[in-house]
Image (cartoon, rainbow, N blue to C red):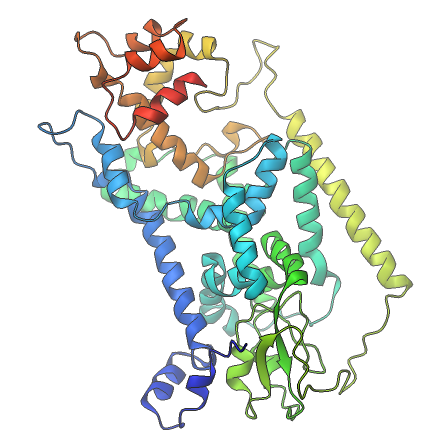
Length: 482
């Protein structure tokens, strides 16, 4: 079983039209065109989902066929050919940490399991092919990072295993009930960065600057993290993906169960071209593979002059290059390495516990009536309290027009911060609440519908809202039930 997707292009003559065009685009396009094409498609798909599918103002009311304002939900259903949360749900760290923090099964764990199963056959395929943040980092490295050399660091250092310690801290904090994956996982980092850096400009120019929400400390923190992720490319190309990204660490651990692998045959001439082009620092000094870091991107195979690199099943041992030639200097884990690993693990555990303590200390103190109240979505308080406060709740949600629900950042507290993509789902709940407006046949105030359902059984409550549009009826009723 061979997965050498680069070979059809390598075997072309150097005077071929395709090779000349790809060489002008860039060396990685020439060496691994299939990967680059998939990256481009996924990146464009993410931008379309973010800036078009989740953009609510393409909706136009139709008074003759649908009651106001169900056209928002209908328009979203029309545009959402692919779920707007597609990239979020295939980020396994988001699902794992959410499940740990909530002590419950999360439906997106199924999607995370599927992508991890796919990565058994294409190790770290998410990082090398699908992740839109990685593609954006590649663009930053090409446009800026490649032109600034003064901050470059070496290949070996204390930072090479940081991603595992960040992953450990994230999972420890989640086990303690504090969700920080929205600030460090790959897809939430990109979503928050675009939401706070570009989305306000889209809203301001297309709909009016009065709809842009005010800026608070949480916005600056998210923007600083996003800038830091890109700025790390000044140290080394794809520094974030190589050494820091905790989502990548999950896939690196998944590589232990791989069934395919990069292999080097004995025809290798030690030209070092594969080491120079590898975007993930996955090639050792003897030109063999660091299996936990390899993404099967096949860039190295595309530049190999002797075609000594092959991507085959893990147990393939035919005509392989001898290890430690030239010597790598790697040896058994010594005392310093053991001590460094122990310090890193301890830092991850203590960091996660510290974040959990700080998050819980800054949470809502509901026992004190004068204490600060963080923003919470509908359904996060007992139903009696929600029904009693229905009038201010309705006014709050009707006032949130930017992206259907304005980003609240730290106004939601730090114990369980809601990431940007999840917050967009809350926008659908706002639509469903407003869909109750046309559900009354007697012409009374729609807000009274909430009061009339207080104390009713689930069946009676469902019949009260039986006239809801189909697109928002199930969730609108379930939102009240919660």
